[in-house]
Amino acid sequence: MFEILQLEFMQRAFIAGIILAPLLSVLGAFTTLRKMSFFADGIAHASLLGVALAIIAGVTPFNGALVAGLLFGVLTFLLERYTKLATDAIIGIIFTTGLALGIIIISLQPGYQPDLISFLFGNILAITWSNVWLILVLSSIILSLVFLLFRQLTLLSLSEELAWTSGISTKYLNLFFYIMVSVSVVLGVKLLGIILVSALLITPPVTAKLITQSFRSYVFLSVIFSLIAFIGGLFVSYYFDFPSGASIVVSATTIFAIVFAVKITWQNSK
Amino acid sequence: MNTEAVEVNNVSFEYEKGNEVVKDVSFSIPINSTTMLIGPNGSGKTTLLKIMVGLLLPSSGSVKVYGVEPKDNRSDTGYVPQKLYFDQTFPITVKEFLKFSYGGPDKYVFEMLENLGIRDLAGSLIGKLSGGQLQRVLIARSLLGNPKILFLDEPVSGIDMGGEQNFYDLIKEIQNKFDVTVVMVSHEVHLVSRIADQVICINKEMLCSGAPENALLPEVVEKLYGKHTSLYKHHC
Image (cartoon, rainbow over all chains, first blue to last red; front, side):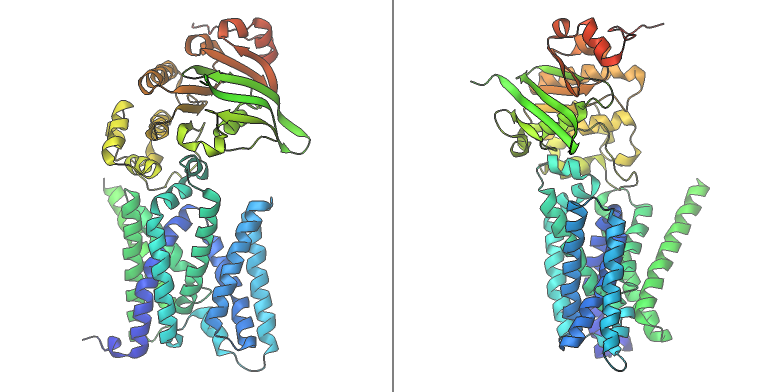
């Protein structure tokens, strides 16, 4: 019935996306409430430095991006915590510097760099089985930890002060959250690209927030919307021959627009 | 046996070097008493409360809550902030908020909501509560861990004028029911003698401490709030 599922590269993309979409949307549920969307975007862009260094060193670019994302996430946390610099300024500097250094290093390499384009816009064709395994293992670990720390992460997102007085080690939990978001964003880069990855982190939770009446349903709906966006986007990409990352993002935005329109219509009809 | 719930010894605090907002303050708070911390805006009373809760560390001096440093004694401490700053669209119900804060069974959460007279709010989103309802939810939250001491920062700040007295009555009721020491920051100087067993006056440094009838002398009130302040509220 679905010839799309017969293709091996599509099978890899589906397996990777079906675990990545829930991971990004669950973390996005917290990230958007904490007004940290720019952080995720910054980490994605700064990870280009890791891609560039990995290309120069002859290492897998994906692994380079993961290490760079992780380091930039920790650096942002430390600067935010121990300096009086504004968070958006810190992220803005890190984001542009990582990207700029990445561009400079890649420009030193002669010829066309397919890895660069694939990281900028995402490329499901570029997902290998080893990428899929890495995504599966890391995503499963992070998702398990998020659900294990669900109560603490929710309180931390609501109020750091109240979380601390509830006995939570807010400093370490914050650092841990930054690390989880950084690694997850870089995992998503392979599928959606540096420029588009934050859409799957932001749009499904924002859509869910429009209609939810509890925190649990908010997280659950975020996951559902992200899966619909991912699967729908991939189908559109295949059958219309559109770029996959962009199709997934437009699919997520379409869901948002429909939910928003239904909500407004329903409110006006009351 | 220690009869003091809180011991504050020579505590000073500065957010920036050379700008002390609390200067060499010392006092103690007896177990199971109600203590009001009063002072004008910017006098350092909220800072002092946060030091007692453990949210801030003093620049010098020491604080003990039931004989232990506040940051190591969070399980004995309940805290109600002056205002909860959060995203008003945060999609969390009262029940979820209390359950996530406490981690225990639903039954106890519902019992606490019942105690505070807000059982019907369990399914409401916290961003949609009125100031008074949210304060009650925050008090319920602070009591869930069975604390020995309750710190409240201007608990009536989000409540309309008519509701203030009811709110203080509720706090008194809670103290008797849960057997807790109550420490609250307030600007309701005219209510001190009705509510508190002890008053601590602060304007960066200590100005008075003791039973309200002995400590809150007219000259102290004048030092705190200026010449035209009376201890009594005139109702027209």
